[in-house]
Image 1 (cartoon, helix red, strand yellow):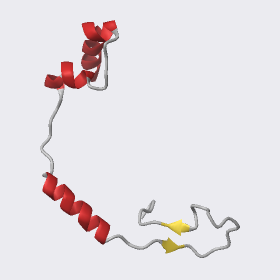
Image 2 (tube, helix red, strand yellow; image 1 turned 90 degrees about the vertical axis):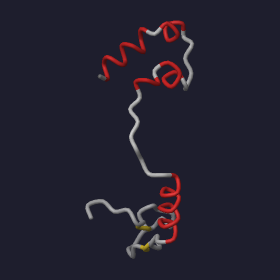
Image 3 (spheres, helix red, strand yellow; image 1 turned 30 degrees about the vertical axis):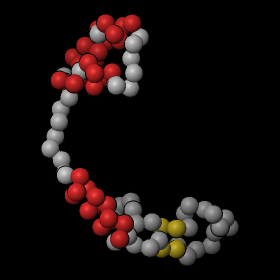
Image 4 (cartoon, helix red, strand yellow; image 1 turned 180 degrees about the horizontal axis):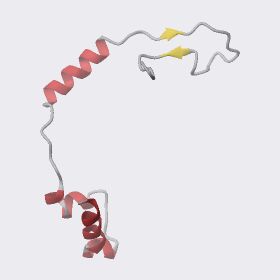
Amino acid sequence: MPIRFLRKVLEHPEFRKGNITTHFINEYFHDWMITKAGLSLDAIIALAVYDSLHTKRQEVVRYKEADPHSPWQHVGRWRIGV
């Protein structure tokens, strides 16, 4: 489907004329879009509030570092390999 879609875009008369904007796909190919049921706006807001209230404070890594502004001095709540 992606290659077929790209061909349709490239063959579209407005695309060939150069009449494209950031809304080109929405205007001319809205029937190609796949919509998925997602969370309601209330649920998204509730999750954002919960996340902001339950964040861990940054932990300071204790080691010798000459640069006080080094991004490696602070470990946030996201970790690789945990």
